Length: 419
Image (cartoon, one colour):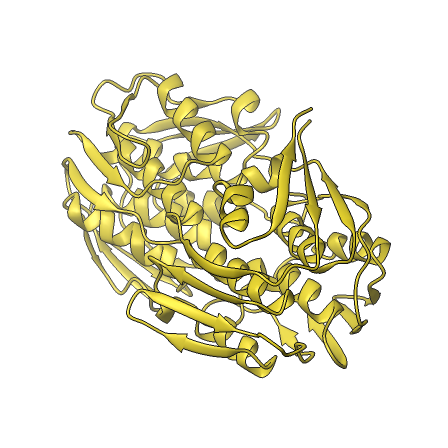
């Protein structure tokens, strides 16, 4: 199992280009099952989760062609096996996203209950309940979701919580349903909007994506299309925190600053200078120690749960005390225990981490427990005195493209140690 070795204490400086968003690419790949012609996707990130999704689609009979490192053509016209088996979905919760398209277009599906990061409960009841409301017959047996219908029909779908994958799954299913569907308390994340944009390019009729009420007028068929996957806002935020935690100056390019308002506000509170371009953000923390900032995660447009761990690392070396409250997942502080191994003064109280910043962290062997926890340990290692070895980095390869190469471009002393 590969590891990352980081020798810290180097202020990062330079520019880094942001990859396509994992959390946009995965539902869009699933959405290609709805098209009766080839769909060409550009700016697709090279990540383990994308590779797993491609393998899953190919297992279903979908033809996939890579035109270059970032562009993929997907043709689902000959899809014939509507099963997502456990051996492929066990590492990736986003695999549930094939359920809606399969039922919506083909009328039946068998999807194993998914795996992924151990960050808390992410039940599929909202997906299942929504599809049942649209007329699907669904059973859950032996760890598999089995769904069948002649054709879904439009329905009013009121989500108990504003779930991103639930919103996406039901929006895809509704695109081929008979009549209109209304999704209320819908997630507002930019990735939901990006999926809607791709579906509209395929011929879907969708209004309200990006608000809490989405209207979908079902259509008989969706066609092939071209779509450019949005840049990854979480990767953007992670590299900006890398500049802040090391006292450096970092410019992220090929991003969308408007997706990062809550994160940029907290970085400015921490004392960073922020300069916005149309598709770039420059952070300058040279000569300054970050100030501790209080954070409470919440659905978009509030502070994202996927940036909580990175700011926990930042607060660990910041001036002052802080509280980070996690409201989305109940088990997302496992990184705090590893940061303590590096000298961080952290205390977990329920769904809150209390942090008293220290002058410097010390390099240590640590273990990644989930995707964003991995990123926080990389950031801590970049700021720490001495050498940090991060084990189980397969988590980070699920969501960060070429992280060691990109950090090395910024001057970090980092290398991958092969197992």
